[in-house]
Each structure stands twice: as structure tokens, then as C-alpha cells.
Length: 232
Length: 260
Image (tube, rainbow over all chains, first blue to last red; front, side, top):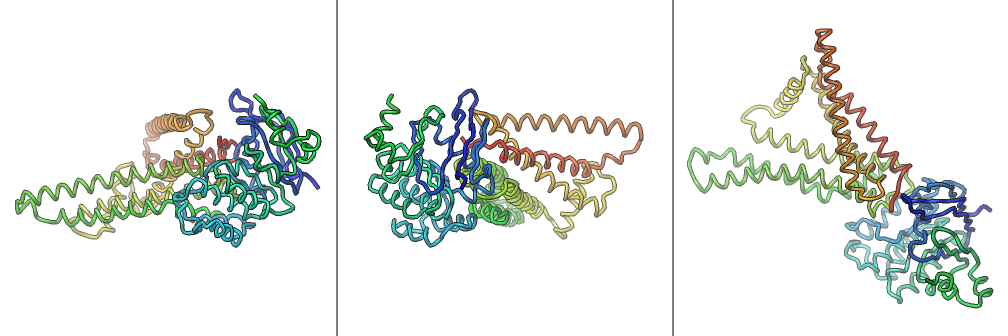
């Protein structure tokens, strides 16, 4: 089976600055993959290119064997690192919006998760706290039966108590044949759910390996290993 | 998908623009009642002051609604397309043509609604007597004659109206194209959009100048003023501008998108 993501010499430049430099990367199906790297390493740029929000300067990228476009957007469920929903809409209206545009959206799953977090469907999005907004966005993304979930910093804005719930939500609700690509700085919080990690620095991939393989070979946690690799 | 995009675009804008258009209706009723009071004949200082205040509020409201609608629609296009909400819009599994069409159709509908309401409002305010429909036709005939159409018949009136709608589409697409062109800049994208708008405006003025120079030359040679019929030029130039600005907006959204 072909990989869900294939990057071939992927390069992105902003003016004179190179954000991604000749990236070759394959992401297999059915795995939870951590995209790890310090600030400005190119994680979000790579994620945006996968979602068609940025166009590469050179090289190629295939999602499900296709270049980013309408077809790939049917298969990707994307959580950006920012608040991207219309503030004036009610939560139930946003759920309806997702249902209207994504055939794989599961309304019952969304309402079930909202109820568990005691988020009222008639609340306006702008009236929710920052953490609750992030939870709503995550619920919407995880309520789809996608082939690829791309989560950019999904736990950065929530309190430690909620992080476990969010990670639990991610693990419990994704399609088992799908891949989750999870970008985060909070490695210690997520490393127990990761199957694989990709380290990125200065726009280049420096390591791609199984999470268990790193722990066994290095004799330390991924968090510890990350701190050593990216020590300033 | 296009119908869904239109539905959500409409829902996103109506909460502000319906009250704005209702304000036109309310102010028109107030102003119409006020100007028909014989306060100036039956000299009453207090009443005259109130009437002047209402008329000034009426005029101000019309300006605020017209300019406010334009600014709001520009803001809405910018934030929902190239701002944070663009992250949702551009990850929807929909063709970029649909996105442009939905936004432009809804914006044009709002601008046309406001324009028509203000137009009707002014006609009603100064309508001494007679049928309002006849007055509308007369005013369109007047604008057609004023802008060069010699033989003002029903066909010319309809074509003048169509040309007006096409020009409205072209104006809105000019704004979307310039905002999109501004996104090509690495920094100061909004400033770049204003810069592009200014450049496009100058280019349009130059093209208008060239057209009228050629027209004058042809007229001088042939002695025929046929080509001076204004709706033809408005319709043709409007169509060309609309197509060009549409393609620019779509091309940047589809092939040059850079949501940084």
C-alpha cells in the first residue's frame, strides 16, 4: 500500500528565507506520528503545504497519491494551530457547517464529545474560553472519518488536566486505518501515544524512527532525546 | 457545494446588513413624513429644527449604509479568505471557482439591494405626484440619454440596467482581485492591496481615455455618432473587467495561495 504522505524534494522559500529544504519523507498508514522540532523549524509550513494552504517552491507532495486539492481535502482532517472558526456562530451551527461540507463527519460523535466536555451547543463560539475553543475545534476534527488527521499543536492552549482528555479523545476517535500527524512542543505529554517520530530542524528532516526504537536504542524517553538533539 | 457556500456566506453577512438596510427603510418613512409636513409655511422654530435634524440624519444614514456596506464586505472577504477563517475556507473540499462565485454573488446582491433601496428612497422623498414606476423608468432613460444614448427605447433601458449590474460585478471583482494581488507580497499585504487598487484604477482611466480618443477619431471620420451609445461601452468594458478580475482572484486563490 502506498504511503499516505509522500514528500519528494519538497522546498519552500519565503523571499530569501528557506523554510523547508529538500524534504524527502514518507508517512505510512495506520500510525500516530509526532512531528517534532523547535520553533521555526518548518513544522507548520510542512503541514500547511499538505493542506494546500501554502504552495511549495520546488519539489512535490502527494497525499493518498494525489497533489493537494479538492480530492485530498475530502480525506484530510486538519486542526490548525489557531482559532479559525467564525466567532459569531453557535457551536451547533458550526457542527452543521462541518456536516454540510464533509461527508465523513459524524454528528453523533461530535455531540457526544461536546456533552462529555459539558460544552453547550447553543453557546456562541466567541463566548467560549480559549481552551474550550480549542476543544471544540479538536472535537470537530476528530468527528470525521478521515484517512489523515493533521493536528498542529492540539494541546498547546489547554490546561494539563484537559490534555489527557484531549489525547484520549484523539486515540479513541480516529479511524484505525488512518494516520495521525501530530505537531507539538509538549513531547512528554504526547510521547506515550506516538508510534513514530519525525524530527525537523532548519527545514530539514533530521530523524524519522519508531518511538519504541528510539527509547530502546537511546535508553531514554523521546522527550529527553529531543532535548539533547535540539539543545541550544 | 456552491449552494452551501452561498447559504453560509449569506448567513454570515445578514446579521449586520439586514438591520443596515432596514435603517434605510425607517429613515425613508421618517423623512417622507417630515418633508410633507407644512412646518415651513406654519412657521414653528422648534418643528423646523426637528425637520432639519431628521433630514440630516436621513442623508447621513444613506451615506453610512452605503459606505459601511462596502467596507464591511471588503473586511468580510479579507478575513474569511486570507485571514484566520481562510484556514477553514481553503481546507473545505470545494473548487476555488465556487468560493469566488459565492463571495462575489452575495456581495453583489447586498450592494445591489442597498443601492436599489437608496435609489427608491430618494425617488420617494422627492416624489411630488405620479406613479413611482414611471419615475424609475424616466430616471433610467435620463441617465441613458445623459451618458450618450440617442434613441432611448425599452431595449436601451434594459441594456442600461444590465450594463449597470455587470459594472457592479466588475467593481466588486476589482476589489477581490486587488486584495488577492496584495497577498502576493511578502510583507504589508493590505498596503500592497491598496497599491494594486490604485494602479488598476489608473490603468482603467488610461484605457477609458484611449477608448474615447479612438471613438472621437472614428466619429470625426465617419460623422456618425453611433459608437457613442454609452451602455454598449459600459457593458463591454464591464464584461471584460469582470472576467479579468475574476480570473486574477481565482488564479491567486488556486495557484498562489500563501496563508502565512
